[in-house]
Image 1 (cartoon, one colour):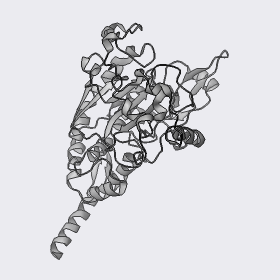
Image 2 (image 1 turned 180 degrees about the vertical axis):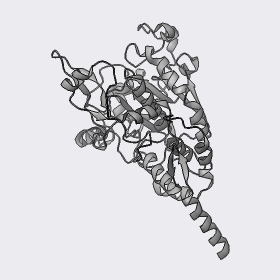
Image 3 (image 1 turned 90 degrees about the vertical axis):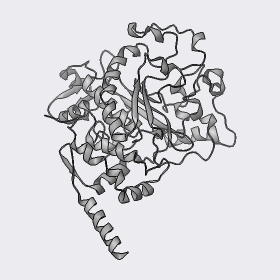
Image 4 (image 1 turned 120 degrees about the vertical axis):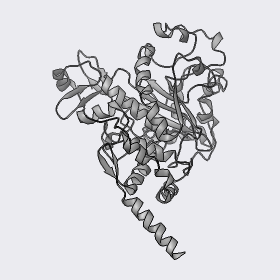
Length: 415
């Protein structure tokens, strides 16, 4: 017995010291486990971007001694039949105690679907009169509801192209079937709609003000009531915003990530890549600059900042997102020249041009490894950081994909 324990301990020590080369950087097992614990767990309460007073007021409104949830939340426009993808997560349908924070949330099926924009599913879609003129390439969507801004359809091809290029690497890393349901696919207008949604348009309306909905239903009106939601910690409000919605078993049921579609292509691609990784169950922040889950587009103290990046001119505010690289300026929306940016910009985000370029080309191997760990069969939804760390420290099977990922050509190579 003593001999077995000694051999097993020596092997574990050797595994800890074994180097893995990912995108030119050397990692060892303890480093990878530490990074995983950082990115897979979040303690943020829902509505973290509200003031504490407003957050408490929202909580009391739904769970206090005399609850007064919004009356229209019970209307037919927000019924289970019409929005089964959202209804179970609304505050009026939740009970105390709410889901615990800081636990593992992941998709527990072997088939994961990604869609673009909010689901267009409605049980009575054939009876719905939808008057917005659809984009010429998406005429079949005219009779189905949509919640994005007018003209969002024109950006769908960009999102489709970016997402498709990453599906093979994601599926391989996770050992799961990840597929895109395109907006033109009628499947997305049935109860088989995609459950990960990459949405054109980062809205500042959710959790932003306590106001009663006037009439009808729009998802963003109710987002502040998704008390079991897990906010993606990299949100900035001006160009990316998202959250995970676990079910009562703490497995993921639905996930949202909104990206400003008017950003320049290099920034749009990088943010959509980040959205894909995060909506698969990694909501928090990496301290490693090689990770797309790092603070690459926001400083730590500016997480959840409600300020949009604006340019003044002629008394009219022009909302924009702009970035300062080491050697050049990035106007992510392509609307302002350098002189105008320097004159009118109120705030800057510094992004290294090389890193932005790498993140726009693909998902770094480090993040693919994080997903492979998240979907190791030995880990389960609902595990605490301590439980997950214990499993990973003892597991050899959870690291079996590492060498295969390390051996593949780099998706973010500068060569």
